[in-house]
Amino acid sequence: MTISAEAALAGVQAVIATYAQNIDSGNTDVVADLFTEDGVAEIEGQGTFEGRETIRKVYGQFSPQAPQLHLVGNTVLTSAPGEEVTATSNLVFFARGEEGWGVQLVGTYEDTVVLVDGEWKFRKRVTKFL
Amino acid sequence: MSESTQAWVAAGVRAVIGAHTQAQDAGRTDDIVALYTPDGVLELPGTDPVQGHDALREAFKGWAPTQPQLHMVTNTIVASDGPDEATASSDVVFFQRGEAGWAPLVTGHYEDTFRRVDGKWLLQRRVTTYQV
Image (cartoon, rainbow over all chains, first blue to last red; front, top):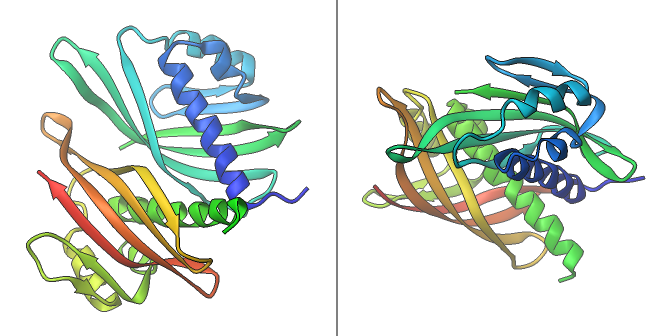
């Protein structure tokens, strides 16, 4: 199956946005299911979590404690389009504290996304902070 | 133009906008310049337009990051004027990390004109406006 650059970009953007929206609303199961069964989440300063079930368990502890937003953009595909693509995006993480909304973290995502049974999934997501 | 052509143009144009942003925040000046046509122009408020690769390289070197920064570009609207021409209008928020942590310092807007040269989308003109 031939995958065009625009189809790959649309698929990657959809999985990235689904991750952001669901992590901010505490839907850990939806987030975990965005990874392949052997998917890896590597988060700078937190650790490397291997396997969808490990990710489900660990992400359960990251549930939002206060209103928060992962704003993700500037997504660029860094490989040729295909059933496995890599992409780099930027992240701004906002949280609401006692003094209102503030920018807590800024970083990058380096993603490896694969097409599994017609759905785009993270094979690997590396989160780094600036 | 067909819907599939529009999607293809939009993906190509968005890739250039994203690559420009990431290169700028990483201080990769040559990578930024390579995204412009040889006669590419950058317009900014309060200064003469910057035109051509040499002038662009010089300008972006002068704006290289001195501390962690991020341009987040969003709300992009792409219009295509044919298979080899497109325009895009985007909003941008510029974040910088200072002693008190990260803060949004500037919001702005890009009006971009793209041309497809040898199969690659390139910026022919970027008009930047901003509010400090």
